[in-house]
Image (cartoon, rainbow, N blue to C red):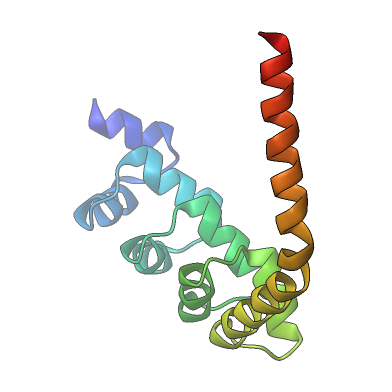
Length: 132
């Protein structure tokens, strides 16, 4: 049965043995090959937690395996990372800058939002009392 699955997935007996020997199922191997990864590339990307479709997006965005891992671990999608990378930033630089921006935005808006939140809360309580 398994030999048929490998054949149906488009693998020769030798290819099937190679992929199987390093832990791929027929369907998983086919996904990696359809995404245009060699056996060794697929193993490398898989070993650090990428799915075939995810790895393809990173590679299509012109990221090496190590770069993709750094940007992904920092919480970025391939498209976001691509913009920042080509602007000359590293994932760590962007994360530090994001924290600064959050603090600036908070310092600007919190003084204005506090009375609004309080007013909204009071209006909600008044509505509830009027409905009773």
